[in-house]
Length: 111
Length: 118
Image 1 (cartoon, rainbow over the protein chains, first blue to last red):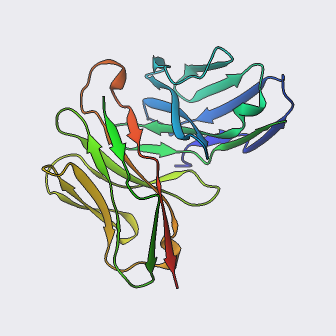
Image 2 (image 1 turned 180 degrees about the vertical axis):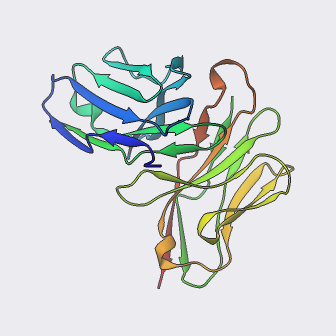
C-alpha cells in the first residue's frame, strides 16, 4: 500500500488567497483526520471523519477553514481566505481500528 | 476529558545506553495508548500500542513500552540507543468509548525531543 497521500507537499501563497489541501487515505480505512502542527501550538486535531461523515470539527479554528470528504478515498481541507497565521504543516491521517497512519504533510506558508 | 503529559521536553542519552521517554495519561476507563515518532520533515510514524493484555508491549525499531495502570504511565524504552533514534516522540491516548465525538480520537502529548549522542 502507498500509505496516506497528501498534495501538495509544499504550498506558498499570499494572504487572502484560497488554499486547498488534498488527502487520499489508505484504502479500506474508515476514519480520516486532519491535524495542524506548529512550533507554538504543537499538534492540533482540526476535524475528523468516520465513514465519510464529519464527527468532530471543534478543532477547526474559524469559519475560514472547511473540510469535506465526498467519498472514502478523498478529502480536502480548504482555507479561504488564508492568513499568515495559518502557516503550518498540515497532516492527514487515516485509521481502520486503533492506530492512525499519517501522511507526509503539506507545509503551508502564507506571506 | 482525556489528556496526556510528557514531562520532559528533551531527553539526551549516549549511544549504547538505555533510553526512557516518559508519558502519563488521564482517561476514564481503560485506555488505549500509543507511541509515535517523527523525524525531521516527515509525518508521524506509529511505533507501538497498548490495547489490552500484557503490560509490556514491543514495537518497531527495538522499542518497547510498559503500561502501568496504578501510575497511569506508559513510558517508552529501548535497551540500547542508536544515533538514528534521535527524533521527536509523541505519546497519545484514545478514549475506548465507542460513543460520541471522542470515538476514534487520539489526544497527543506535546512531544519529547530525543537526542542520542555518538
